[in-house]
Length: 78
Image (cartoon, rainbow, N blue to C red; front, side):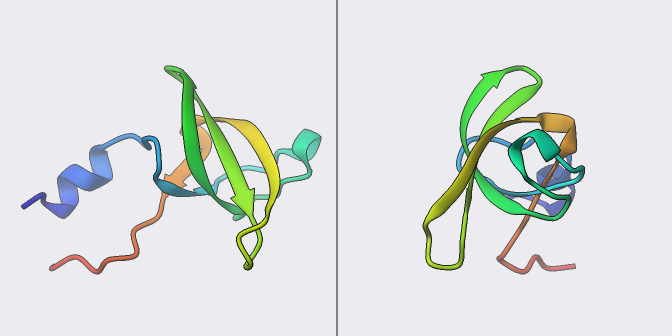
């Protein structure tokens, strides 16, 4: 079983659900928007798809890996 500490230290990867840590006005995206990583473009850039509550994509944008926070929906034991 993977510990919470090792998950936190792992960089965002393909299929992770992430939140933006900075505004991307050129893509009409704001800090806090949530998306799914669909592709690793290079060591520092991920292609992220942003969808509405009905699952319809409204943006696909290259995002700096350093500006992404991986979200965890399964509770971890403390």
